[in-house]
Length: 307
Image (cartoon, rainbow, N blue to C red; front, side, top):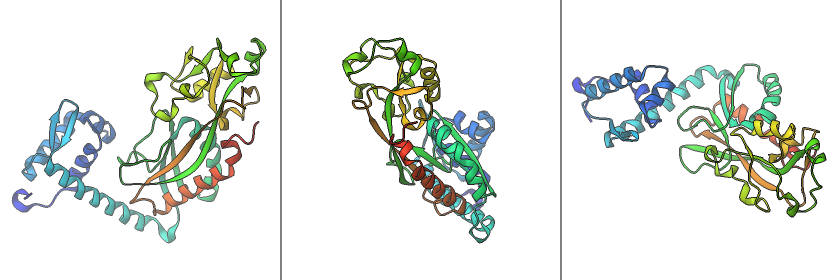
């Protein structure tokens, strides 16, 4: 690939190009870059003319890299990594943890485990700034949407380094007020006819959140929410039975476990960071803090410590 007039590549053009490679559509990339999609498209076309080759193919699904686009993307990622490392070297005086770290986490774990612990993280590292994105779904570390992500499955693709944070348990819960108004539930067969609170099936963002086939009987949800916090609040209010993480439900004294000797599910949290950022002082500090926090909360996470 020869540049017209042998002019060096402009980093701003490379930055726009690289961000676009990380999204399936021009609109998504433009949103991330905070510019108008039309402007982004125009600048990319001009960049293609400057270097004398097409970088993207327009397909029904959006954009796809051409072979030359793939070559440029690989080099652009290396340049980005080098610039991040240079910035870290400048800012990370004496290995101190400073700067911003964005954490993507599941809504429940982010809200009930990470958020209350952030005051201690700030005490240990006063120069750190934390963006906690606790939502239904995950930001992508590979696409640089977050510095680290707490996932429900170990990632198998991308330039990521993953380590196990913790197992966690889920059980069936109901509010005391709900149970007072129904016949006793002593065996799995007693579950028949009960109201169930669960996820909106077509909005489940991870197969690890599909619980129904692991429950005894043929329970079918009558109240659905894409939010685990919404499910928790509805269950608290007496809406019915619900599979909830123990680290959420066991902190609420109005909720009790239903058939704990029969119903116990287990899942795992994984911490993923980009391989080029794992040794950055700020990323290491937050990673180590998350590992220590989950270790300290082991009993709550695994359901060994009921409220």
